[in-house]
Amino acid sequence: MTAIPIPHIEQSPIPMNDLSLQHARLRAELDGAIREVVEGCSFILGPQVERFERAFADYCQVKHCVGVSSGTDALRLALQGCGVGEGDEVITTPLTFGATVEAIFQVGARPVFVDVDPDFFTLDPQRIDDALTARTRAIIPVHLYGQPADMGPLAELGKRRDIAIIEDAAQAHGARYDDQPVGGLGRVACFSFYPGKNLGAYGDAGGLTTDDDVLAERLRRLRNHGQAKGDKFNYIEVGGNHRMDGIQGAVLDVKLRYLDQWNAHRRALAGRYRKALCEVSAVQLPEEAPYAQHVYHLYVVCVPDRSDLAADLREQAIESGVQYPHPLHLTPAFASLGYGVGDFPHCERVCSQLLSLPMFPDMTFEQVDRVAEAITRHYA
Ligand SMILES: Cc1ncc(COP(=O)(O)O)c(C=O)c1O
Image 1 (cartoon, rainbow, N blue to C red):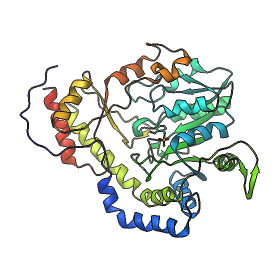
Image 2 (image 1 turned 90 degrees about the horizontal axis):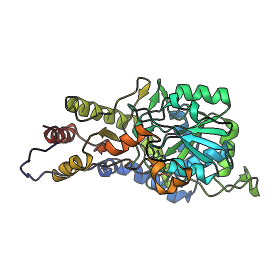
Image 3 (image 1 turned 45 degrees about the vertical axis):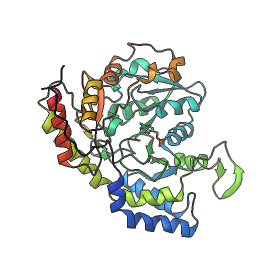
Image 4 (image 1 turned 180 degrees about the vertical axis):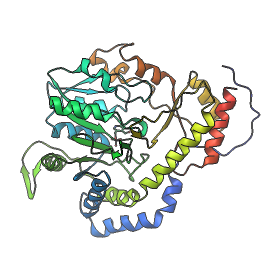
């Protein structure tokens, strides 16, 4: 498709994400919360982390939240906590951030990929039967880009076959499945609070949510070198240092109060994109699944000429991204699994066509209109 040349006019850049306005607005609150950590010398775990854990557990409508050092560590601890290890198989999607699969390797288990749904880009439960074996111990559905995976059939399968369902909710804080928040839809859920996420810290941080009292206690132990509760230096099992910092707990506790408001604006921006672009037939817009309340961590479209469109947008000072260009089964790190081109055609098609457009809570409708106009012109 050839683009109609556009006269070059100086325009203010539209980034993929911009946290600076949010931080400026919350500065007094955040400074106060951080000062409390410093004055109390509660740098690692401590009261601010505990306060956030309680608030986030309530938010997810579960009994427990365990604050950890990153989303990647959360995934690893979830697997370890559910007893997944050497010789076990874990089913997941090839369309995700590498950490989902990395964690499976880290506990000594083998990832088994299942293709995604072609409309919603999340793990397709209809295809799971073929991948199940006697060694399947866990399934990690990923709530990709803010859209919950189809959890109903997975939860049912998990119960029937005694398989742990571990939500990768790193991109979906506040998303809902049949009106129930993610975080309580499986045995345990893993969140990332990486700064750019819908709920982001001031550095690396992560969390696990669960209703299972025994698992929660084990996760608390594992994040802190496997030490017994109330009995320091008594190592019950091999754990590690996966603790959340006090400053991250304090920042997250403040920001959590705004999460629903930010997610509502993301949804409104997505609605504006849809209205502006629904007539552009070359662009496949993100579809909200009938069971889902999507929180648009990313606004990802599929187009036939990604590099051309991205270059055209760049010319007009509009940033875009590609999450993710490589199907995980075709990357060198995971080649040992023995998959090849054509094994997961929906994932491969999506990876070759997807493009993330600007999306952040302080984005304006005018900015969405400018992005949409640039795309419309590109395909005119
Ligand atoms: C789907 C998914 N899983 C896991 C992670 C890992 O989280 P973290 O960067 O906090 O380790 C991320 C982070 O981008 C993610 O997007």
